[in-house]
Amino acid sequence: MLRIKKNDTVVVRRGKERGKKAKVLKVIPVTGKVILEGLNIITKHAKKRRQEDQGGIIKRESPVNISNVMLYCAKCKKAVRTGFVRKKNGVNRVCKKCNQEL
Image 1: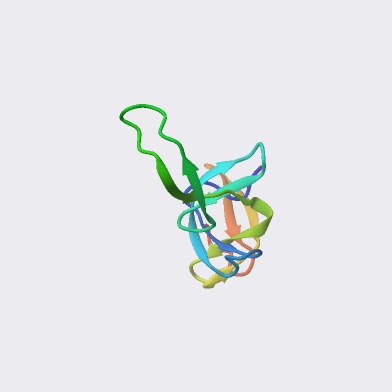
Image 2: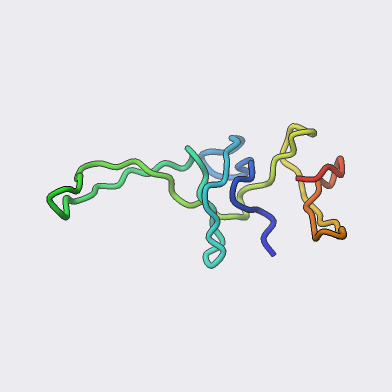
């Protein structure tokens, strides 16, 4: 079970973007990577394929390994470890420090 899901707010723990907060745009469970909004930008040189396509230099987000990010707790105001609590309506993720649902 993945602890990080789409639309979560995370903090980057390793790499050139260390310490920055971002929203998760996409989770790729097969490779264990996530794409973060506005972080880890790469430059891609795209060739014009069809008449209506635009060629040139494109900047886009590159995947980050899921082990290099941690969930952000709004109450604690920092990156936290998460746990799971079983409730009647399912399983919820909680902050290990303040026990608030994420």
